Image 1 (cartoon, rainbow, N blue to C red):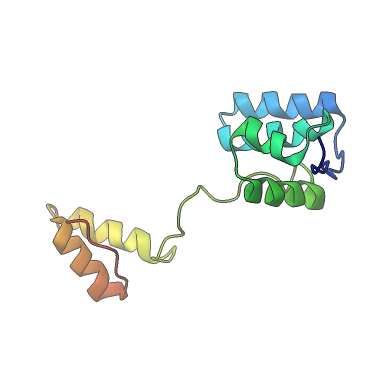
Image 2 (cartoon, rainbow, N blue to C red; image 1 turned 45 degrees about the horizontal axis):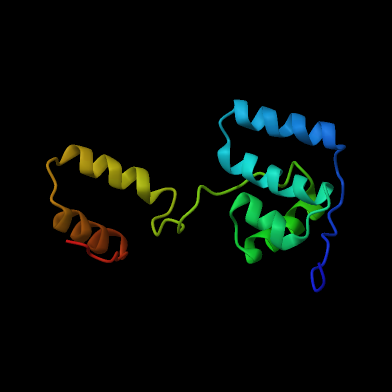
Length: 129
């Protein structure tokens, strides 16, 4: 294929060990990690970046990010470290406190919850109500 470049993936693991890592991640129900490992296995078989990304259904930008993450850290640093979506606007201390407040004062309306969060923590969310 002209115009396509091959991956420069460091083979941190032999292919058999990569297969074992994929199987272990499947057993542990780590779907996002399995997807990443399957992605990185594709260049072992000679895929170009576009094909490897297409096979696992990710964008070219994500595939480039994953390639660099694998090369920098191997399997240990390749695990997803965040569940996805936007990071919480509330801190790790604020969220449990909010849950406690909400449990004590049930029932809450969505509008009242939004007002509470804004007044107490100075955090606003788009209102869908």
